[in-house]
Image (cartoon, rainbow, N blue to C red):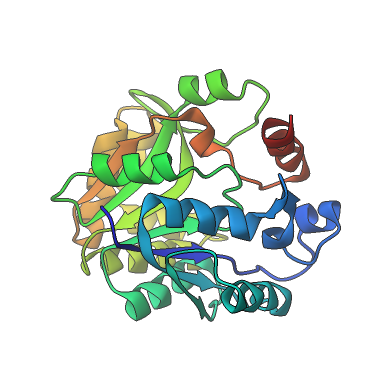
Length: 257
């Protein structure tokens, strides 16, 4: 899908980011890897995949300064714009989607290994009738690509999967799923409220390991009034982002040898 729009989440949860502190910079997006900042690497991958317009959601002054410097000496074909980050990733996606419209690809600034072919494959593999699609990588694929990585896996009847920080909001209806995400995010310290949102039957079947990945996404989508689809990643490294210092050491070893 050439000429697509993309949103890069580069906000902050407040306080000191341990990965940025470990790298000696003020924001993860400014970490230099293989001669480029993570920000430049992610923007470059999206640009090479065919993005025509990329919004970067951030309120960090140093990252905004880096973006302005890139805009002053443009090297990318895509139009780049700065969007103010909101209080939390779900609201940042909500406001970014409202500003940019659908379809919209969403990723994060710490997706250090992002490759244009991963983006192209994801868009090609996402069902045409889905309102929202999520990329997940099977555990075996991730472990084969990066045996030493420690990821968080979600367990389903048909296997364990790790998220890949790539989402496709194909239609405006996808915002209904984002609104559900916001409600879950607001109740993250009150798990009984999250359980009430998901419904006892869905929650029980998931906890008992009786639901497949596709069934789970389908049921959660139905709760939001949308068609949600899981897309299985073709590349195990797509699940490797930079959440902690050991992740940075890993991706640096991969990129810089």
